[in-house]
Image (cartoon, rainbow, N blue to C red; front, side, top):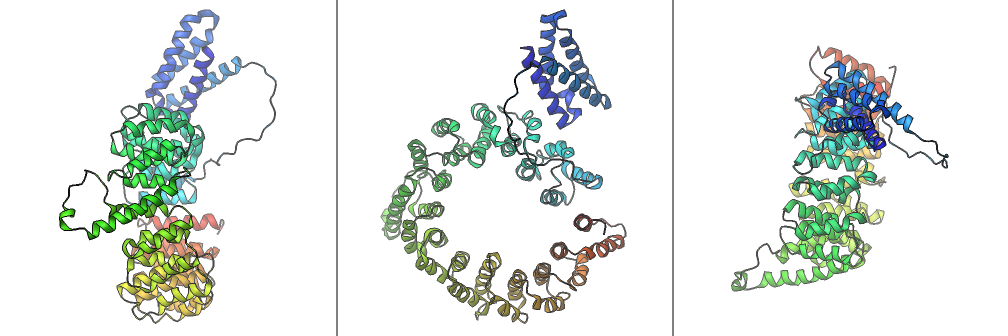
Length: 579
């Protein structure tokens, strides 16, 4: 009993030291520790006087305020460690094993960056989300001095989800204890669900007890977040299958029920599959059920969906050709119309890879469009994929993206023929032609390798309309085409804003001498998107000589607030120290 109480006290003290000493006086766990220690001191008396001293130290910590709190808390931590060490018993050493790898956590922020980040996390104002996002990208957010403001920022409706989903997990197990201590289960609100998701993402291996408590005791918001965390971070954990199935059977809260269906995807049992298939016929849950079926580990899920698709297609055709009297026939409440169910099933099937899917989906493209084409793309043979790629020559703008995706999967000559046709098409500057061109160039830029024939083709487009040119310029950047530098620098000063953005991106990717002077004037451009494109391009140049010109621009700003320019300078100074 004494050993457990002191161990618990040590854990609570460590948690408060990380979260912030000022939280000690209001910490309920520390108050419970004080009560337990007082009872032990009364029981043991003179046999263990150190227990009374420890209880007194806890009392002083709870009663302290201001700077005294930190001093008392550190003294309590020292005394607790000494008592725990005295309780230790000798034991034979076990085998040597490698240490568990942990993410590196330190204090990467300098004083200025730390102050700005702290302000962005705890105060209101413009540019907060951009500052935090950039700190996440740089890795500066993994700073132990930011633990307290990060926990505070999870309460923020503007920043809360970003911090919980992208910042907190980066700190790993170090952040778990102070957050776990403030999660409210029974009366939990959205913020408590957000905290729960963050803790599970940060330390999924040790989240079982927390998730089990949330499912058993939590409010609707907390249960929903727990189920989403199971689906996203510990899918298929056998310890949760029965609780999740029980929630599906009795749950009446729509959000919780849909989250439970997502969580069932991780299991291969017949009962889990049956719950998903039943929910597919209810309009309120059909989307979540389809997502669960698309990710299901049950070996029969794919066959069941194909059979259900065939039935739904026949029913949709019959519904389409039925008489007006039939159309007016009453239908059960919340039932899913076959014409709505077919694309939902196709989207779920697109997650699988099986040749039967493409055969079933290809004839459905004319009526069900993108959903059917995506299903073909995932499992089709070259002939079927080519049929989807041919849709790029059509007029249905909703199909251009998937058609371009299909084209890049074909042989090089076939892919270039289909995609390059969008650049030279007679309607390339119309709404349809621009949509086709955007789909084609997006796929070229995203491809692992780019056909070298795109270089000469793209260089010929500098006289094209601005709407066309802005779509083609990223291809030159992707190819790092040196012949494009002079014409890019020539058009940069007077081009429309959207062309300037694309030109900056291309110049940043190509790099080389003479590019930096052309980008610097755009750092003061009236349009925010052009300024940011110029900044990203300058960083991409990775040129040490860029530091001094940017520093000069910041000095010339004459004290005006320009945090984006300061951020650029800090980024460059970090990349090129001493410059």
